[in-house]
Amino acid sequence: MASAASSGAFDFEPAGELKIGQVGIANLRVRTLDVDKLGQEMRERVARAPKLFARAAVVVDFGALSATPDAPTARALLQALRDAGVLPVALAYGSSDNEALAVDLGLPLLAKFRAQYEPAASDRGESLKPERKASTPEAAAPASASPAPLPKGAPGTGEPGLVQTAPVRSGQQVYAENCDLTVVTAVGAGAEVIADGSIHIYGALRGRALAGAQGNGNARIFCRAFHAELVAIAGHYKVLEDLPKDLRGKAVQIWLDAGELKIAALGEA
Image (cartoon, rainbow, N blue to C red; front, side, top):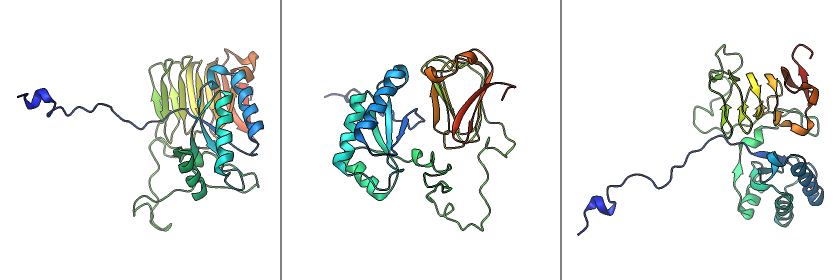
């Protein structure tokens, strides 16, 4: 008879290890529900920057629409996006109708993309603030209670943000949650650095840099040698083909001005 060990009775190693982490996913905020136009716009993006968008994972956000689309229309949009060359993988978190639509489509909801747009003014010019669901009794305490301490590295704490001392190489991603990110060396081509605050790169930026990842429009990106594939602040981005050629290789800073992404040599902004 086979022993317990040989039969695997004492083998406690899992067949697969599941971890939840930060991933770089594009977010498509639908402002006008025109399936043909949305598909064509995405096809043009893929053609303009295939290394960035071809077969890219995309979250579809219907939060800017006055009503959640019906399932047939949503399916037509998902197919148009696939035909354009990207892969819709989820819906952005929204109303109960949006949740029901996600179930009907067989897609998950990603809540993080909801807050990304809310700090900015909406299409109606109203000021929106992120909604936070209380997950514990402490989180549901009244406003008169003592405020929770800010996360380490958040603006106003006096604490340093995340400091990356090793080069960020192709295929790697570094995410600074609730704080700034400082990269002491370089960000290689195909690498990605993300921060909820600002990003400071003391070497060359050859990959992607996304600051203000949760909607902070005051975040900035600084780098000593500018060769980026993509830069973004609070969801506003530019890809390599849109970046000014006269600034390549120079020390630059990147910021938002009235919703427009600006790039200038350091000392000239």
